[in-house]
Length: 187
Image (cartoon, rainbow, N blue to C red; front, top):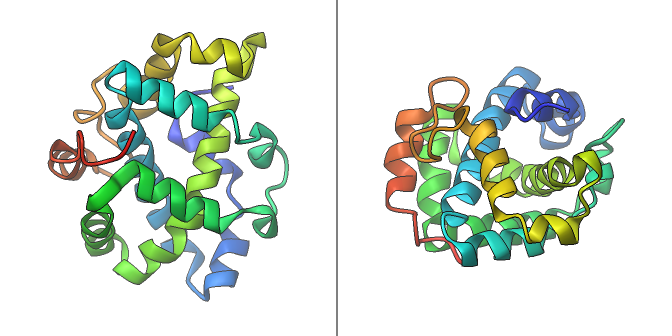
């Protein structure tokens, strides 16, 4: 298993998601790339301290890595959970994140429609990364460094999360957006 955003993107049922939303698949893929990068960067920002890492590790325990293994069925995605995840990651900055991403990917409404679909997939994918190699989820909780390392790899090969250059040149936007978010999300 690899720890990069393209691995997660390759698992997404882009055509099914696009059909459900009535959007162009190419636009959904582009938006998904940026949204996933931002979600993971937000998780990384919130996990900068031990309390944030513990909170994220605890949340990951309730996400089954199997959701993103094999064929992902859009009907299996809990979008209510996805909305809660996005709110937890971005806190009071959720609207600002959606608005800024919307300016990059074809509108805030597309971002708001995709975020609750993509957030549970990101959590399930991240849970799978934590449990790979035989490390159980409970063990992963005690390994805050493992979670931080995985997020660092996903977001930029060891750079800090707010410096990480996401796919498609999102690094500057993430830096600006998440610079004020380091404490804006809830732990």
